Image (cartoon, rainbow, N blue to C red; front, side, top):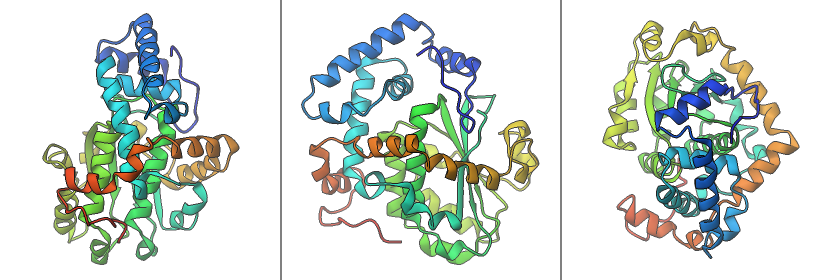
Length: 314
């Protein structure tokens, strides 16, 4: 892939593509083409992957190859893991549609910022709880929506890593009762090991007095390496040291559009036929054998007894 199709909500400049590829010394176009062809041929020969692979578009394949640092063998493992772990976490990954989130999005804004962070080519994701609506928050719905955005981005984005801004302006301590560490852990494993996401930082803004309890609960669901990248910022000026003002939304003194404006635009994106097709195809990115493996996931990844099946409790 030599160019990235323009997307108004996920801007990727040709210079960004160049920097991402050069970061791993992967700027040889012929090498990219040959590697992707080799991976495609391999996938078509794997009985448990062949059905799902038809829905894994070339641009998604290249992103997985980039995240594997250009290793063909590493990409094969990542694809197998990506497709299998989605089936092992059906409550987070499967049977999604935009319609299921229409009421949920009245209480939460979750948006990618349009411009990549220029210092490290990371995509910044912002979470805001809407004032007076936090009691309608569902952790399971939140993570399902996050993964739906992530799947859509696999078709259009081209970044090295991700950063997450969590704005706690409109929450109170009762929100803590909605944070199930097991669901958080399952989401983190699917994100980092299944999707191969590199989490560059988690930035908490407008922290309330109970922020220590919130941070403690969040860290229970994160690997130690990721937990160390969680920062509570006492001011927006502190945030600017990590993420430049030029890409931040107006909400935080930045130059970009407000989160509410972006959220409205994303609603319109997901109502289009093209987006519905993408979401439907992503629902099929799963191996047949993994559909029976949720118990195995609980045992191997979470250390839970095999009988612990249901994780969709808020």
